[in-house]
Image 1 (tube, rainbow, N blue to C red):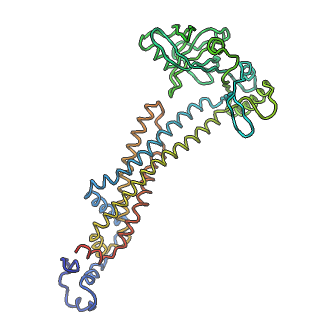
Image 2 (tube, one colour):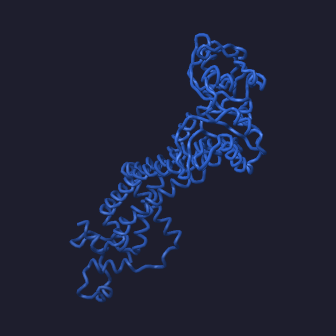
Image 3 (cartoon, one colour):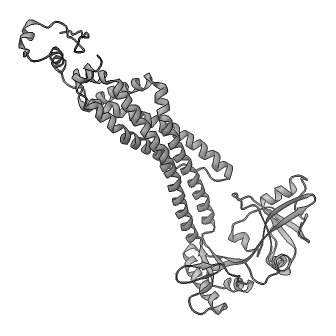
Length: 447
């Protein structure tokens, strides 16, 4: 039986029906109700995948019909997701860099001056660490090398070029402790350090700023620090992230010629294996307490292992990530509210369509699924664009900073998880509202 609906005062008037069918209709039933009963006589329902496919196709048509509105709605989502991905890429790049650096120094212990007590409070104080302390520490079992540090900052002059950088007085052992590589010349020798020769090893940044203009060979070149002339014996390979802006000179020269002090600013120690780091740290504490004649609980030094520093870095990274993601979540929430608003408008605009679909056999779950799929599609498209945008921004930032570009499963999964959650959270109410419309009222709304 073919039905060709036309508009009447009830919204739709069915074609004339056979007499026997008309006689079966109760007297109190309106023509519109009669038509809907006829339309809702269903055959077997299509399978789940076919229904989902039909809903997906319908959602694409609905979004494509209002492309500009759909794009502007997704804008808030892909900006928020892009911010999340960029934040994750940046923090993961920093974490990978720090982890790599600490892994290379994982067997090290650093001793800083400072007063500590049982409550964990550390106060800055004048250093009591000495070169003799470093020499005694080097004799502890499982210690492979130890170097005191004198750290200062000054202007370096070569010809007409000058550069302000950090100057570190150290022993030659620091080359192995910090895993430096010399690309030109050599590191200064133990004899040069012992005799207090004025020799220097340049970091990559210092080398380029002093010698790039002239193009001269830096080896055996003379540079000036204050009124002291140093001979360059080596240039270091770059390590990145500001570590290359440094000059290393013998500890004795730094003490006498630059800082005029008998103490040192810190001591770095390397253990033979990672398992011996904590025992070595304990032995260092006992030795320094004895050397400094410390009684009671207040030490005048602090020891740190790189494992402890890595834990602190990871904690800081987690806090920073949570802060950045929290800021991005505000943008996502705004985008989600925009999606809810547009979906409610869409429900209002398509009330008559919803009524017709329900009249010809669509169930409430079908209407619910259709509008949920539309919301999810909006968010997933926004999430996909945001993923590309975030990776691009993250790549640019980490490369400009000299950090590694790291992509993890979390980086790829978060945009789609967040986008889907936003879609379900903010698209559920409009979908439920659409599915609960009365088909007769919905069709009459087009009058």
